[in-house]
Each structure stands twice: as structure tokens, then as C-alpha cells.
Amino acid sequence: MTGTTPGLPGALDALVAAGRAAGLDPSAVRDEGERLAAAVAESVTGAGPAWLAAVGRGDDLTEFFRAAGSARRWRHAPTDLLTSLVDAGSSHAAAYADALAHVASAACDLGEPSLQLVAAASVTAAVQRAAAPERPPARVLPGPDRPLAHPGAAPGPDRPLAPQGVPPGASGRPSDTAAVPEKTFDELLAELDALVGLDGVKREIRQQAQVLRVERLRADAGLTSPSLTRHLVFVGNPGTGKTTVARLVAGLYRALGLLSSGHLVEVDRSELVAGYLGQTATKTTEVVARALGGVLFIDEAYSLAEDQYGAEAVNTLVKDMEDHRDELVVIVAGYPLPMARFLATNPGLESRFATTIGFDDYTDAQLREIFALAARKADFVPSPEALDLVEQIVAAQPRHEGFGNGRFARNLLDRAVLRHAWRLRDVEQPTVEQLRTLLPEDLATDVEDVAPDLPAPDADVSAPVTPALDLPAPDLTAPRTPAQPSEEPA
Image (cartoon, rainbow, N blue to C red):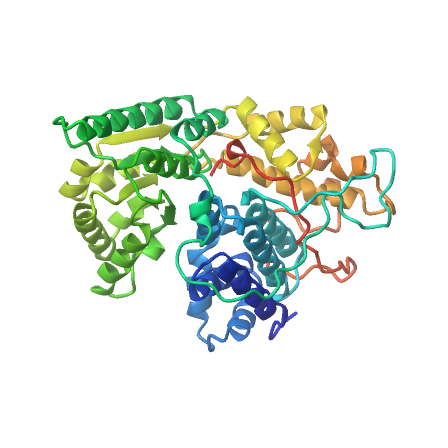
């Protein structure tokens, strides 16, 4: 629908309530929710004015596109505040993730309705929920040969209630972190080892961690030790696990006593560079302040070498890295050649980034495994024949610069889920087995092979769905199986 959106303000209020219960700053929570909703609906016709009306931002569309651009990564990765709750082991993480899922669902009401928007919002909701380590109590599912109790009921645990009003809490870090044991050095290394592939990366990170561990032990013993740079360069194509590894590095450095909190702040150029010279330094310093005690992860950092605005951000970053060298670790990431040029643009950069770690593309078998893990996380079970077809599809993809790797596998799953739903459109009471099983036909090369009336995967997502479909509004609040550390290459 077009116009005001009553669902989004309510979803944002519920998110703020969940954030308060977790001890988060309400204004930061609302900002995160508004940006997430904008990112989900970014390409939908009429979404901009509807979003502005829903969040009370006037009529300047640049506000909508700025918010959407700063949160695009959250469409396929947990938000920053949710990540901080998960990393801290907060008992409120699951409730906050569910509230984020409601925000993603409410974004479906922005602008013209579209099946592609529903699919995108479903993925975003599932990603946020899967990041939380806890779930509501599960119920016993019907057996594979027994239908659900009523048509359309979702398999899996009972759907959680929407977050209710809670007393206001203090702003800042989660209030319950002190009572939750943080992960040990060995536990974090085990998580690193559990990741799919990345053998060279694992070896480099282990070596870096052990060198810094010995340096810390020597310092504690009163011995002289060289001052080693802790900042890292990650190079590789998208979807090869760089963000996931950066999060583990933050935890490892905390476990070694090199960082106080070990949280990860992920940004790109848009969150460091302002519209005018002189403003960028302030914006960059504010981002650095959020990352103190943890890791600042700058994706596509080479884009900062494009103009004088980016140069101002780099100069400010170099100064802040020196001023906060004992409480900040910076990881810059991007394609190999552009990153080499980027480091050469400022003498202070090369001296501070002594270690470069390369992330290779995943093999066909590893992408098959990533697809299977992501499917299981979403309560789907691909048949062996479907997985064979996945491997054939990824084998046909050229491994050029920009190949999506893990993201390609996850996008393949997203499209398979759409085709699976269409395949069951005439089954009034599907069994749990039918609802969970992905078959080769769900991986058809062309969506029209399965659903002639569905928009093609590359169709204009802003185009309205044909009225003949008359699809009901989705319920994106059903819980999913918890994700394991190895399941989400980023």
C-alpha cells in the first residue's frame, strides 16, 4: 500500500521496548530499526514517502536513501546492536531479534506490494532471528507422515509473542553482560576451525593470535617485547567469510586481554564520509568512538581512496588509530588490487597494516555445504539430488572478481524457498516433510519453469505483483533453528 504505514511505527515502538529491556540506548535502537526498514524496502516504488511519513522525517527523500544505504548489509547480516547483544551473551538477544523481524515484516507495507519485497523481508527477518543464541521453548512437531493441525500452520516452535512494554533501562552496553561468561580463547578458536573452508585464513589467524598471546605474556612477566601491530587487511571476493572472521578476531583479542569488550563495528564509506569537507573528520571520529574497546571493520575500504572526502576520512582514521592504539583494532577489507592501491595512498596506512590475509573463493563442494547448512538453519532439508544440482549450478559460475561465494549460495537458497512455496500452492494440508524438503525442481534454472506467474528473479522489484496472485501479508515472526558460527559466511 502507499501512504502512511501504521504497522511500522508500532514495530519500531516494540523494538525500542525490547532494546530498553536489554539496556540499549532507545534512540540508537530506533535509528537502527528505521534504517533496517528503509534498507528492506529500498527499491520499492513509493517506499520513500511512506517511510518518511511512518518515521516522521518530513519529505526529503535523501533521508530515506541515506538510511537505506547505511543498512544494506543488514539485509543479509545481523544488525550492529543485535550483534553486540549476541557477542555479550545477553539473554535479551532473542527478543530483540524477534522485534527486528517484526520491523522487517512491517517494511512490506511500504510502497507498492511486491512478492520480491516479501521474499527479501523474509530473508532479513530470518537472518536477524538466526543470529540470536536463544529461542522460545519448542513444541513437539507432527510426524513426517502426519499433516499439520490446520492449513497454513508453520512447522517448528510456537511463534513468539511480540515484545511487550518493559520498564525503561539504562542506556549503553547490555545490562546483563556481567552475569554471562564470555567465550574463552580456546572456544573461539574452535569456532574458527568449524567454519567451512578457509584453511589458509584459519592458519594465519591462529598464528597472529599466538604471536600476540606470547607478546602479552612477555609484557606481564616484565620482559621487553616488540610492539606488534594488531591491525589487519582482509582481501578477497564478497561472501568469503571476512565479516565472520573479523567478529571472531574481536573475540580472540578480548580473550587475550588486548581489547576490553571485543565488539565489532562494521562500516563502509557511507558511514565515514560526510557531504562536505570538514564534516568527514567528525563523522569518522564518531565511528571510531563507537568501536573503542573492539574492532572497527571497514568493508570496501579502497573506496576511501577515490576523492578528497575519502582522503579526509583516511587521515582522521590514521590519527585516531595512533591516539587509541591500545583500545582499537582496525580491519580493512576489499578486493586485492584495489586494497594494495588504497594502502599506498597514505604512508601511515602501510606502516599500521603489516598483516594481509587472503580469503580464497569457496570450492564447489564447500558452496554445497554452505547451502546445506543455511537450509538446515531455516528448517529446510535439501534432498541429495537437490544438493547435487546445487553443486552443478555453482560449478557453472565463473569465479571472476565479484563472485558472491557464500552469498551466492544463500541467494540460491532464497530463490529455492520461493519456488518450493509455489510448488506446494495446491497442497491444502502439506505434511511437515513436504514443508521442509527441497527438491531439484526448486532449483530450476528459470523461475518460470515452476511458477509462470511469478516475477523472474532479476525482475524489477518495484513492479507490483499481478493482482491474480492476491497473496496474503506474510507472518515473518515464526522462529527458526539457531544458527551455528560456521553457517554464515559474510
